[in-house]
Length: 277
Ligand SMILES: Cc1cc2nc3c(=O)[nH]c(=O)nc-3n(C[C@H](O)[C@H](O)[C@H](O)COP(=O)(O)OP(=O)(O)OC[C@H]3O[C@@H](n4cnc5c(N)ncnc54)[C@H](O)[C@@H]3O)c2cc1C
Image (cartoon, rainbow, N blue to C red; front, side, top):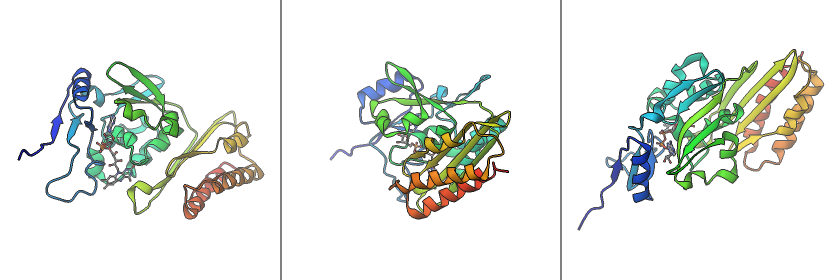
């Protein structure tokens, strides 16, 4: 009896990639493979029958910087991003440093973290806070999608359109206050995180973004509205109203357990009180 063998393709150009994908519609893109190989301890690993390995796609490895943006190719390894140094927004760097160990980060890519459809991983939340954009390429087209839209439910099927994430564009904004906190869980897919960013102009809070990661991305724009336009340092009463708003907001969220809600509120409270007198 014939044994059905796995087939692995190594395209070097988009033409090759999409031609292979056309001929093998069930093929799965493979970046670092750490999600696909997770928890496989058998001698012979279980892989999707057809794989399109992105390793030889040079264009996906590029890192470029302009006056306003940093662009990172989807196949750039996590450790390489950390090594870029100060140009990388602090919250993104902190997030990546808290993903697995050095060995994992030498293999895992930023694109694989964003495109893991099984579960929401850690990198998308800081990217949403940083107003990142993703470029997707299909056989005939390319388009930019904002991180916030991509990770919202309405765009969850994006990857079923046979598109490849090619690069991530990060605006190089200056944030006066930035903080990333991760609450570890035994299940690597269940970590909760908080990204807190604030910006001031002439002592007036001009922008604030607080993005939490539970099973989905959680952002409370109503609460942010309470603080935007306020003088710094904030009045303690304003900070208290802000925290109260968050408590009410999270009380209605059934996807986050009570203990995680407590951790998230605590973290937000500490950080907003850091902006008071
Ligand atoms: C021990 C261990 C610990 C981990 N800890 C964490 C953690 O703390 N936090 C966390 O967030 N994650 C964690 N992970 C999960 C994951 O390994 C990494 O987050 C990693 O970044 C995934 O990248 P990859 O390149 O290995 O993805 P892959 O496994 O290659 O791909 C993941 C998915 O994305 C798709 N894909 C990949 N690249 C593209 C692309 N360019 N375009 C379209 N689709 C694409 C693939 O088809 C696949 O479905 C952990 C994994 C392990 C094994």
